[in-house]
Length: 189
Image (cartoon, rainbow, N blue to C red; front, side, top):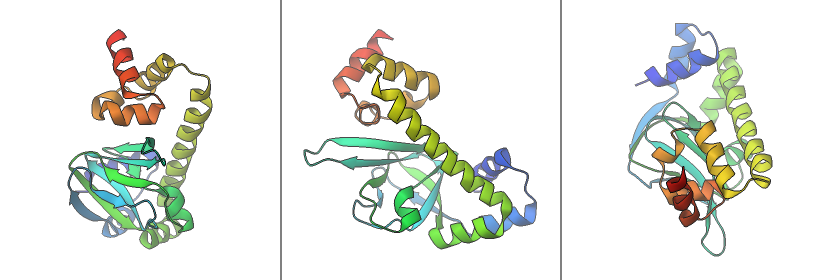
């Protein structure tokens, strides 16, 4: 149950078995269906999730019903509505599964307790924050001047399996283009 999480942690830092067991004791395995809401739009996020199998997506919907995806987490990655988890205010975004998934979940309290008590886990948290910041910066600054074609090429280069894992609608909402434009570009590549 914890093999993938153990690999993730050990890819970041060295850690002893006792510390790993303490961390693992804070997580629970949940099995969820496709499109299951983990955090609703106006809900305060109370958990962090590690994807053992499947995937989750963080997105918002504007007043016209257009979805904009901010983040995906796939197998071997953490995902949550991080701003809400940190400041304990409503998420103003949705966190949903994109397929039938197996997730390891840890409460906010246990997550921060582990960060405070286990230095190796503090490094894991730092990696989560750094990755989130880097992805946000690349999307904001990189995509501002990119054409639709350049956005698709960028995603294929930087996240090669991304377009294979999510629907065109979800991928287009992440890239900031229409699903029909994405379909046209994919046929050209």
